[in-house]
Length: 417
RNA sequence: CGGGGAUUGGCGCAGUUGGUAGCGCGCGCGGUUUGGGACCGCGAGGUCGAAGGUUCGAGUCCUUUAUCCCCGACCA
Image 1 (cartoon, rainbow, N blue to C red):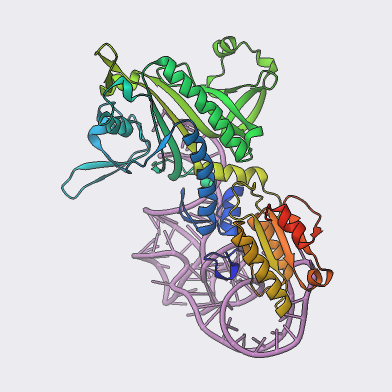
Image 2 (cartoon, rainbow, N blue to C red):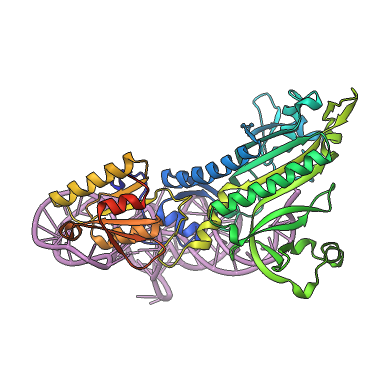
């Protein structure tokens, strides 16, 4: 992508109506556009980051047998009445509206009931199980208060997966597979080291659910860590009974601020009993489905990554999610410089390496500042200096020193032969 | 939903005891520049969040209201 053609522009000043780091930087750099409190649009650059995050999640979910689909945002009243969750007293984040004929509809804040209803159509025998489906869906929640930029919005992208199993054993197997898959997701996103599988409140069926909590000052949660045993406990379930259950002592725990980046639930047969969600077992009898749900907040993860890695000069994207791998800064407009930069851009791009090509007629300082603000992992400079020296300058966003490479060395560095 | 703060060109801000809106950035044109956000000249751009009120006169005072941010509560 040539920066001269890019839809967005960076800004010299930070938006002061936002105080959270992720919102300030993402808006300043042009990754997101704020529509209203808790509602953000994702620009071409921001969308690229989101798609990168989604692709990692997609690969891992497919890897454990997940099948991607997409459900609807508009939800039927009857779907949710079965479980009592249409009631605003029970679920206070509903956005609801009316069809022209007066029929009430809701906007999907979650899709558990919806996936059950849909799956009933396709599940009849134990031979059909297990079923694991997931989607990337924009969830709409009428939160009392939006906060922390894209980390807690009224509209956000979530990967939600639902598992249907014949029994507890089949469910547990998938549940464990999912924990491992989630760990791989966070590793690949660059936040694995600081992300903990955390015991949290679990709803009716199990004592605990598991949250994936990433250490992050901007987060809303507090967890207690037992580093030695690698046990993490959400503050909300920390009591003597929990400590006894997990066999840890309170004084061995370390309190840390975290952001919840994933949450997985075991519903057992509770929900399928409420919704009469059954299949025929080997004995020819009707049996209730074992259900689980597994979420990852895609947009929130993006915010957490910004919060965790940004420095005083701007965003620092891990390579796996960066909107481009290379920021190619062309300094000057001389024929030789333009020719060399154009050529390198074409070569890198045709080799499948994503490049943000700063072909704008601007001073070096501005280009360097934008490269830093945008947080692209590598900055390459082509200038009269580098042409004279017969090399190419490269600097990692996370480093302070530059390196000079010959073109073949550079190509090799990016795996291009 | 309780408490606090804010709202003035695209962005960031100033605006005195009420006297008819200004600065920086950005933008357009011309020129000089080019390795860490250059400079000069000219120029465009504002019903001061909205509605009422007080006043000869309101960005400024009063009332109502909308929106945004923060703290708290909430987060199945």
